[in-house]
Image 1 (cartoon, rainbow, N blue to C red):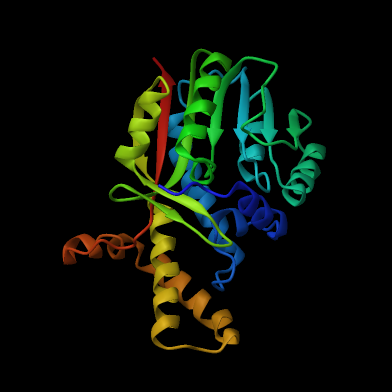
Image 2 (cartoon, rainbow, N blue to C red; image 1 turned 90 degrees about the vertical axis):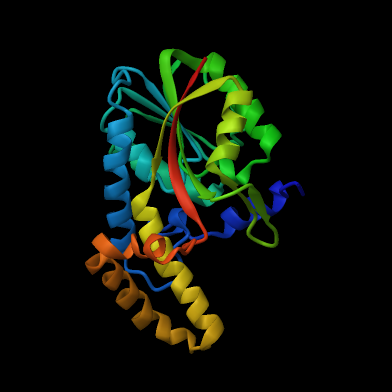
Length: 268
């Protein structure tokens, strides 16, 4: 597989707008701010279930903190949070949260070279591994094995595909891996997979994003229309949530192309 170009990835995120939509890759589709709030709230319910056994008096390592949504979530529930973010713009957004949460410690650094100076109860990756090559993921995990306290775990929330792995080239680069590929990487790095949970709110909104992309390919529409189409698609998905996510399975379709999963892992 062709390797990711880390310079291009860094350039992309250095230029990205630090908004609540940007970490979820929902910028440019006309979705309202409430879309990110909906997804975050729904994902938080999943994460709470995965963290039931984690020591709340311990330290959380948030890898790739972004605008700090998860950083604040952890700061409200754990004694100490260490956040690592390489982008200057997102680092500044994170720094603004310290006034609300003095238990946050922020480092502007590449996660591949960061070494925490305190034992970790929980390591969290909220969409970071897709921007790393396989070998760098293994190296990162092997290093984290020595940083995690006995009983400590890592939770990864990553965009997935159904089979194999695909690398996206161009200005925006990422690797989309299947659940089985991630399981293999985790096991090769010395981690056992405790639980895998599908990220249903991601899948719902990804259905809308893929629909808008296909619509534009079929019927090119003026850019100003997105401010109308985006909210209509979003609220339509929310209203039909109970059955629309099941429709692809009923029809025998693999839709949307991208999915997302939470992985809870622990060193052997």
